[in-house]
Image (cartoon, rainbow, N blue to C red; front, side, top):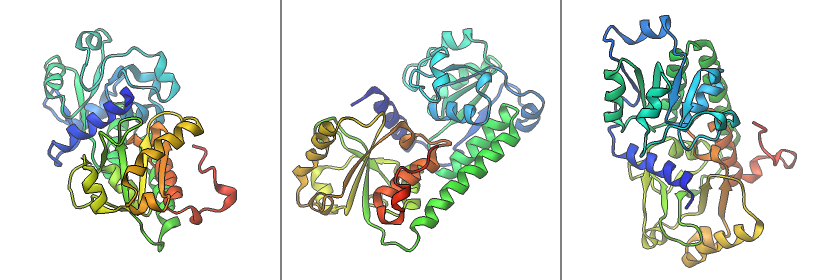
Amino acid sequence: MAARQKELIAAVCVAAMLSGASLVRLAQANPTGFAPQIQNNPARRIVSLVPNVTEILFAIGAGPQVAGVSSYDDFPPETKALPRVGALLDPDTERIFALRPDLVIVYGSQTELEGQFARAGIRVYAYRHAGIGNVLQTIRDVARLAGRTADGDRAVRDLQAQLDTVRARVRGRPRPRTMLVIGRDTGALRGVYVSGGVGFLHELLDIAGGDDLFADIKRESVQPSNETMIVRAPDVIVELWPGSQPSAETLQRERAVWNLLASVPAVRNNRVHLLYGDYLLAAGPRLGRAADTLARALHPDAFPVADLKGPSR
């Protein structure tokens, strides 16, 4: 499995073990309050350890304020020229301090790291994977921190409009029981992780017109056995993979691993879809595009032939 996908799954699994309350917060050495500091002192040198929040910063026009990014940042392309400072499991604190940030964005599970920066008088925004509402709030929060409130509000409106459009497109259509796969060992039916009943992927599936096969398990990710998948019998299996779509031969080989579960309706009826693209697993401004892609896999008849390529964004 690609390192990028391992990092994404690790982030989701860590988030699943954290409390659902207070999903985003700001740790500050200055206890005088959140809003006044944001309004009067926008961050000018931002280091982000969270790729989807980095993407948000660029989407709201704060790219020039980003001084460093995680080891896994690759979107937008401008991030490739920025200093790398580690990631969820291996943050490089010395390098981060050397970049002289006035705001560091960390995962909510990185409490020790958060404390180090707060004690040094550096603002810290602690992000945790959660639902789409949390993504929208994160856009607003980060925009205020960067002094770009109006841009953040506009990004939120645009994203909400895209999601509403997808939901309207599939409204009233039969909703297949769908297993949304977010991780699997390449070339084998091992190490399978699927979306559970909470989180932005679960909510994206709902918007796209599918019923989550594991909605009853209130975690962001679930690792089912082959026996469990056979018993639950999904109507559709959708796999989300980061990166570019491989060759037709590779696609055929990867899809064929599901033949081990030949009795499952999704396999029997040839409704196993492999979707590729980093945006499919990124809780940020491209969620509208991800919802559209999922909807097209689940309900191809809801989209005119002339529109098969999907949104250009």
